[in-house]
Length: 70
Image (cartoon, rainbow, N blue to C red):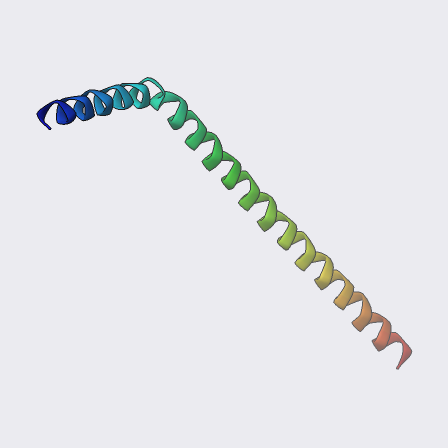
């Protein structure tokens, strides 16, 4: 049983080393995902603002048209 614990510890250390070797890769992927999320959020907010502005322009045009016909 003591040898099994030793093997488990050795396997754990090997796995930990592999993870540590790729830690920078994970951080790079994480940063890229965060940057993409930020860009998507900005694009969504820009689209929403644009739609709201177009909606306002449309509403103003409708009001002017209604005012002119009455």
